[in-house]
Image 1 (cartoon, rainbow, N blue to C red):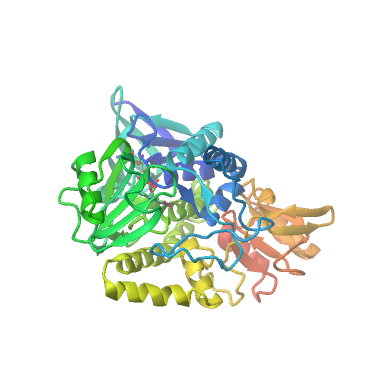
Image 2 (tube, rainbow, N blue to C red):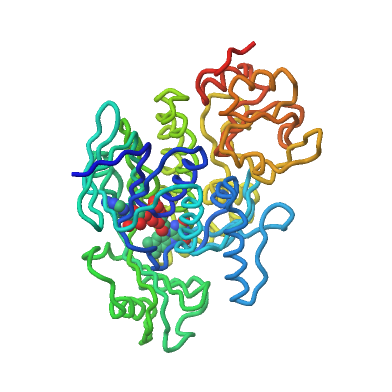
Length: 502
Ligand SMILES: Cc1cc2nc3c(=O)[nH]c(=O)nc-3n(C[C@H](O)[C@H](O)[C@H](O)COP(=O)(O)OP(=O)(O)OC[C@H]3O[C@@H](n4cnc5c(N)ncnc54)[C@H](O)[C@@H]3O)c2cc1C
């Protein structure tokens, strides 16, 4: 059997796998992406990404491309494009169980960016390929084995079976991940209790249900927000057969049961069925094999958090894997990927479970929703819940008492340099770490990590007067208000200094 070599193989060209390919190619790491489908899956899934996910892509230079997709959608709807966050006024931050009251995101972040998942995958694939990632469609990973120096993969391609040898394998192959199953990763959690459908279709009576979220004794039906989109939930157990093809008759029967109408649905452009099983891998890493995106965590899509998690995983793992693959940082750096990202996913699983509980029919839940809605009039409660859903309040425990350390900086944050203000995201395009040095001694120290860390003389809007170290994923890793010296933080995240620190 023919055998080829590369530094990293990514199984799965969904949003998480492609975002990881972008990260790795930004660092010049050789990447092959294996995708079993011949082309992008056009079924309607996510329709938008949260601000933090858009910000992560902005750091890699994709802000313009995703904004253009949003603009084209809004133009087609005849509406002005929303501009959330800084300078754009308050942005809608989403909903919790259909309660549309989230507005107060802590730790500044923009609102939603509208981008259908298939368009996002196209934007990511084009960018990854432009950076030199090799994306092999109709190539399915069927088996792998790892040893002390790499991973040997067996792949079924259009011209037959072949072997690939890689330094690392990233399983970004979705909720039913073969990488996870073959690797024996434990995936504990809770079983589904709902049957849900998302459809793009034509009801014979467009007013058979009011626009927006409608709770009925028989379940929930969301009409919109884009024309022809219906989302339905019944709370009487998971689908009998999750693998059976979804039919329009099945979706129509659910719509009739829920609304008590005799609506007829036609011209289905997309039909998907899902449930709310919520499971989380007990580790995201086993030696040279890593799990990314839905391969590591599954949950219901309420609140639109799947892409936020997957893109966040890729942003967290990409620079670490690049450093380890190149021998620039010790292997143990990869353990911080599970340590940082797993608690974030655990929180999402729990909030999606809570949303399902709050969406159930009946007067008891009606009363609970009423109380919940009133509580969201209070700024503190609103901030808490908005932080939960948007992920803007995520803080990795990096062992510092400074609140700033472990938090993600908004890309619009101004960095004051002697030459004028610069946008933080624009300083992070290289994918390297960034020391914003308020004093010359810190700049001199950071020179020891040249090639892995960039240095800019200045100070940032959020930490005036202090020097800070910002990682490639936008998270602050150190500030000069910390008692520990910069050398320690640089060594921890970027390996040993290349030249001795003076
Ligand atoms: C109806 C619905 C609505 C949703 N709405 C939202 C939303 O509004 N917001 C949101 O953020 N999320 C939403 N989600 C969730 C979101 O779609 C997922 O979180 C997201 O697709 C996960 O991305 P991923 O790259 O991890 O996995 P996937 O998108 O599943 O990609 C995995 C890829 O791996 C490929 N693959 C699988 N096995 C192999 C193999 N052995 N070899 C090679 N390739 C393989 C697959 O073909 C696929 O392309 C929704 C999901 C559904 C079903």
